[in-house]
Length: 205
Image (cartoon, rainbow, N blue to C red; front, side):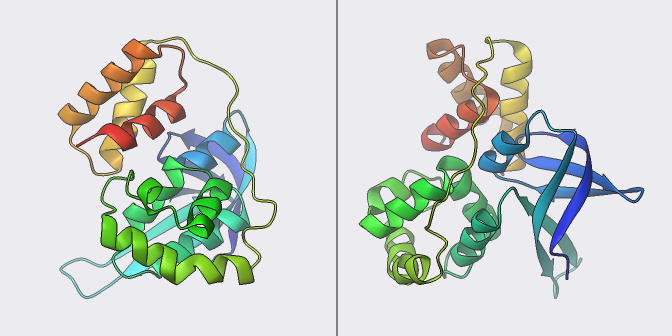
């Protein structure tokens, strides 16, 4: 079992980080919170969740990386809820910070959870019912914070393309993603990539 991977950051997008360690490049799926936390770093350490899916035509082995143990614990709690898959959990953690998510669950704010693509009313309520006590007893809600990128980027093609690419990797159609991203950047051209993607997750159909 892999606890964490520590090495050189070889590649980074809002949805994936590649860390080179001992000559091996590890591709890890990440949330926007982790993306914000590791931007600008050459060397880093990501806590790992391993997902092995068997029984289909092709087995799959996927690594998920998190900037903090707390975010990884929240991810694991989310995927333990019936109806919340790996991609939905990652989108929840991309749409709000770990501390915001803890507050939403503690407050029973199912409306906020329903703003995440793919999370309906029943699933939102199930998340709250299943995890409200767990996040308090596990200690994961204590002093959660993930650094955000304070550097505003001017609107340009690179920001648009990277945001659309991240949304596509999260499972959204490229055309629909591009339409929403352009609308966001027209209104707020200074937004960095991760904030564009966060906004798009609440708008995209």
